[in-house]
Length: 137
Image (cartoon, rainbow, N blue to C red; front, side):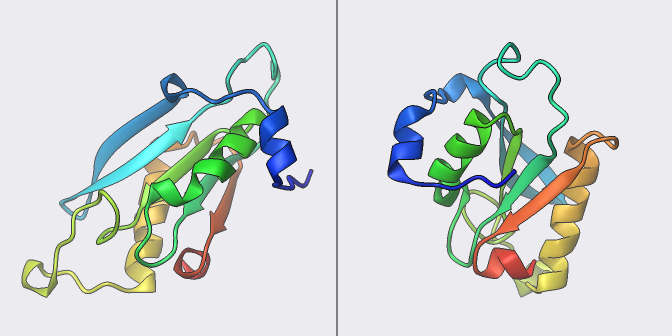
């Protein structure tokens, strides 16, 4: 099923409150990283939810905040949504070369892979959604 985002779509959907969010800090290669997980507002609306979990990956210079409206639309449609701040961006740590970190697509891809292995159940399907740099990761 395709989700189309429009202003009328957002107005017709239930409001996703902060209590549906689970902000977390986690370690990637010894550095603090930030992520948010949003779950559908009610299991009564989606009693047998076999939808894939969605991982949102922002573009360069952005953060989890970029995905606010997308997250609302997806959770309202019954998806569990994970938004990550890539290492060096948003609320994640910003180590540099002196810390032994060289930013690259492969570094961020490893980060996303480790996150999914740690926080998304093995039996779940996963959809990766990226914007700009995040789409390359």
